[in-house]
Picture 1 (tube, rainbow, N blue to C red):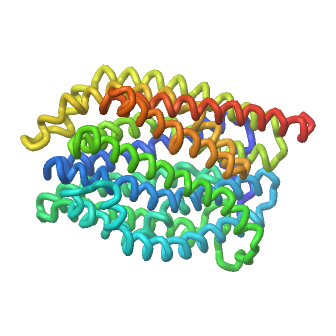
Picture 2: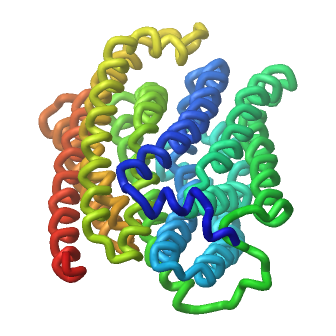
Length: 455
């Protein structure tokens, strides 16, 4: 372990500088991820609206899958960052190894559950005629659950010590391979939606092999994750789970929100509305990449500040990330509105999906405002994860997504009679209101922490 590592100097120094330097590679990583997600949608759209709608039904469940790895990774990232801030490097190593133990155990349990209950879940979601497409795709990606969970944990290990470059390289391997393999597997090999699933699994597997080599083969991380450094401690497992479980539940909440929105869309306008929403939300998620990058950086920086008992850096991390997030959101929302029609054509290039283009363009223009409603709530939640208060972050997400967004969407769609557009506006309004409550809570928490820390 090199204690003079430049990445460690960076995350323990100026929080503004650390947030920028950590967030840019993360933005690139997320951009690559979204590019291959969008590539999936674009290539699958060529199979018809039913196949695209099926992808929309399976996406919320896939978010749970990704959320497992990200949740464990967030718990490890938070705890390792706090140990680094406190200069307890032995425990930082042990925390990383505990994260991989969680990865294996939770992956096995979750795979069994998803393989058993996925058909019932899809029926409850209203998949209807698209269910076979969804099952064909879902059985493959959920069967390879451990690959995606491992990827999320390994990436978080690199992020926790400020090594964003290699985390980005690994994701780049996944994204580029998936973009190349998608059309080959779907159309050249004529595997259809099954080919899209296999392309995703194969590309993620190769990425995991690369990260595994860096961790245990090359062994040049700041952390030393050799098995000799593992010593089981219930406290470490508990500390990681205090962030991992709420973080994973947050992804489940987002999945339940997506399921609820899909159900309302089906009730209001049929499965084509789900296809429209799926396509437009892929673009919204693409626009959210800078915010996710900043938020991930804030998790590490706030964890280090909290571990070092530096209330000033914690406060700066929170406020600076929100300002930066709003600035980028405004720019991205403008781009979405201006180019909505051109973007819509990417998802409607065949005769079977061409009729969806105007609706997709309208959805993209309206949901561009969703990006503006996110920064203050997201950054507040990430600060709470960074300091190990995962339950606080969970409450913010529960309030914003599962309660306020769902209620607002239902009221505007069915009570006010606005239809599908009402669902869009309900999601936007709910996100802003719930995020505002989280922002106030985070400000109060930091103020009280400053008093305790004597700042």
